[in-house]
Amino acid sequence: MQKLAKFIYFKLMGWKVVGNTTMSKDTVKKAVLIAMPHTSWHDFYIGLLLRKIIGIKSNFIGKKELFVWPFGYYFRAIGGRPIDRTSGQNKVEAIAKLFEENDEFRLALAPEGTRKKVTEWRTGFYYIAKAANVPIIMFTLDFKNKQNKISEPFYTTNNMEADFKFMKNFYKGVVGKIPEYS
Image (tube, rainbow, N blue to C red; front, side, top):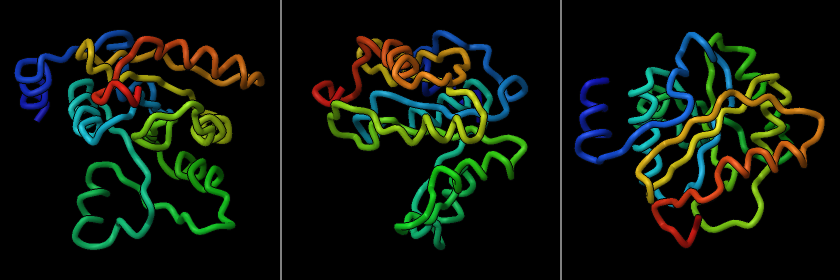
């Protein structure tokens, strides 16, 4: 499957991977992976191809109602984990617990929280990384340059403002599939 993924990604689509291309399943077993800009459903299969190419498993979360038969089987098989989104739940703690329960868990999230244009990132990914004591690894969904740039692992500090400035700088100039949402 990795050969097929490489053929589609590199040859058919003309994309490339830059940055931390040596990240492997053996070096970073737990992390919050943040992908930006998230502007289109195309981002999903780009992410699936990328993880196959670099040889890591990644996970995502979805509302528990999505994980019923027959889709639940497929979503779990590709790394999905259900989460209870009813009000009153501490979602950060529930997600941080997933890191505790698994030897290998890399949670992929989009800080924008939507595929539309946003002016501010949501902060849940940041608090999840802090609560689980895992690094954040940033990667771009750069359709303008047809590339995924991957960062080195970044551990949060006690200065959220400086951390966000650092992370936002990583995404400067990156253009998503729908440029006006970038």
